[in-house]
Image (cartoon, rainbow, N blue to C red):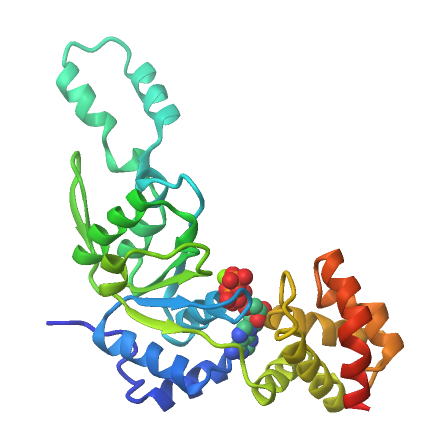
Length: 296
Ligand SMILES: Nc1ncnc2c1ncn2[C@@H]1O[C@H](COP(=O)(O)OP(=O)(O)OP(=O)(O)O)[C@@H](O)[C@H]1O
Ligand SMILES: [Mg+2]
């Protein structure tokens, strides 16, 4: 029988409410995708621009399902031994030394592959510590071989360690993969997953997100910051601001005592929203004057 996580979340709206309860404000598309991933026990593949809340969604899902969050951060060159398990070589050597000269070399060799010398990496941890949410973050940074390896693991929800046997998850982890789309992930991997493109939030939603993260912020300031970052996202910057930048910008202005976004305040704190010098120059020269005129 298929064991599903969080059986009490019976509609997408339940998932939306639960996520809201832990401070993550999803739109309808995100809540539905998360609901289906839970109900259908399928991995959820989240793609979207930096800072739209992909990683935070996996964290929030772990909270609402009361599951352990296990994060596998991908990077160039990552391989199975960093994702699955490894043997603790220094401890094995110590064990060998402590054993001294023993005639039974076969037994000694077998004892080297005892569970206590196994180092569980994130995927094995997620299979053992169920219920769990396994966040495979930024899969686009890993290479093709690693994707092929993930395909196998996702298909089985089990790992076979030749020296120890097969370890199978009691409840399959909820797997969330994220990508910033720095390269296309193969269709074979996507096919196993429910795919969802995470959009930037609407201005109204971003106002709410900012207010959740900076509770005492003036409402007008939150509105103007949300409107400003939304405009900056269409300004063709090297690095358009994500939600984290919106939160930071509002917080910086709030800390300085601002209740509105005015030209001095915006100029003084622009570094919270824009992270490249070229972008900063362009925004100051071409974008801010118009933007602030509209807000005034
Ligand atoms: N819907 C949301 N509700 C509340 N907070 C959010 C939401 N979306 C994003 N955030 C907040 O915005 C910040 C950035 O989100 P996150 O790091 O998850 O983005 P990301 O898509 O993973 O970015 P990257 O691609 O750069 O890793 C976090 O502080 C997160 O808490
Ligand atoms: Mg992320």
